[in-house]
Image 1: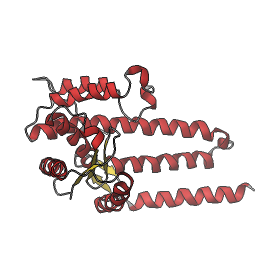
Image 2: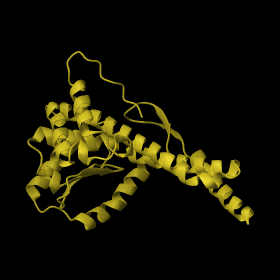
Image 3: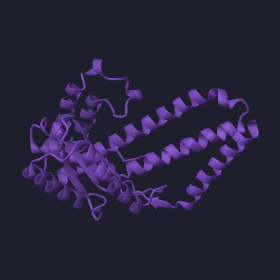
Image 4: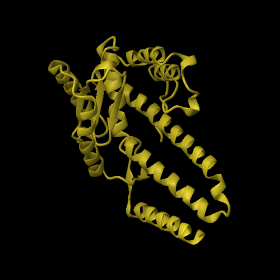
Length: 259
């Protein structure tokens, strides 16, 4: 009974390895470091383009042409000073009262009408806009997919190599999920720094971006309303407030961006 299971696991592992070996190491546009990627730039763009109709079907487009024109104008201006200025960026406000902004690989960036209602000024908006563009320029979607593939390969390898490892499948999976959450928080922190860079480049005061994290903290219920940091997809809002503020101090060496 174990042989067919073993063969399926081995086949899955082999296919995953072939996928990785057919990939090539490319330079991350933000860090300048070579990274093994499982998604090309054209695949990122295609993924965003294919997912965009689903996003719009789920949320709907916010019916305010003037505001839609504004986000597109500022987004395109900021995209031109980003690390991937040649990407065909797309910006849209969707009709949801949830306070959120998110990005898809390939340059698709969305703001909800809910988050637009909580910005106190354009500079706060610009900081969040730069943050979302940072997810795209840092290739965070592609990197997350790579991490998931690596985790699956590692888990399958343990199952094949270690007798009785199937009994440990649940704790092993949970450990890998925590690692993926850690990677996600690292990507959020990197995007915060990119948000500072990009919004500053087009003339906004990035101190306002730091202040918006106080709004996020309030909306999330404060320390009592949040899950523990190690279980969260995002860093603590007040930690982000302090970190962004530290990058803005004069004569202070800014931290090196790393993934």
